[in-house]
Image: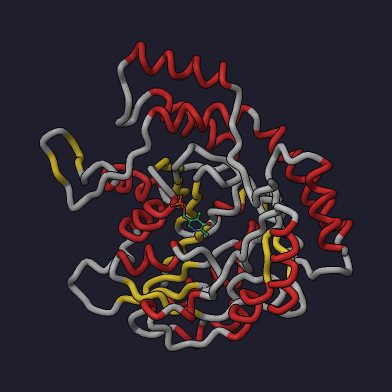
Length: 362
Ligand SMILES: *Cc1c(COP(=O)(O)O)cnc(C)c1O
């Protein structure tokens, strides 16, 4: 069986050594030493400042909205944020959970990221933020989005869940936006079992968010505001330290597989048009077919061969009843109906990769 993805498991001895330390200290969570070590190492590895580790990527988004004043606090009604319909559902549901209506505008048919040309006409007096996604690690048109946000005084939160360690014009892509969030879930490129992170532009926001994720506590007897529990624990941090130590293997492996798909399947499928200023981390292997009919046939053929692909991202979120979208996003619906993510994980064998390619070329 070839799964679409497989969590990366680092050296067991390395992990055991960290866990021995946790047992010796009896310090399991609440800003422990492993959490501090991982925070520092990630800032160095990614080339960012003001990073906050949290318990998962969905809470990373919610805490970012709360910290930046995007969330609806109940004082006003109908706060809105402009976002993409072509993403994992958590991008939009996290907004809805914070009382903010996701307003979907269409993606570019080539890059599959939010098209800046569609954003401005969707801005109303209720709009508070733009929440774009660097989908599959492909950098959005960050300069154009920045300009629109500045002109209309909007916050920008990038859902950068797929963009771990992606550089843009030589610097971390995570440095764009008032905040950029990561998911560190087991199936993501770098993981802490469950986990997430927020990179803030301003240190003051980081400091506020540190309190927000710890019940709003500013001190043992000082409750500064309504907070939540979104802390990362020491076992998660231990896993993160071990995986981070093996990133070179992970990235080299992924690159080899991703590039091999691109070479071998050229002409057979269509690939995402990559932002020429952004790197690729080969977090996913999405391919586009000519029609949904063809996609379904390929998906079935793969399954017959015990190979599991996944329809990422499907359906387009503007289709979902509970988001009550007024916009119909034609490009997103079209891409969503024809896209398939192929198996891609670090220790995938050459034999497995050839098998996938062979079925697709048949
Ligand atoms: C995985 C993912 C999330 C959610 O992250 P979790 O860590 O699973 O909560 C949010 N947005 C995108 C684009 C994702 O791929």
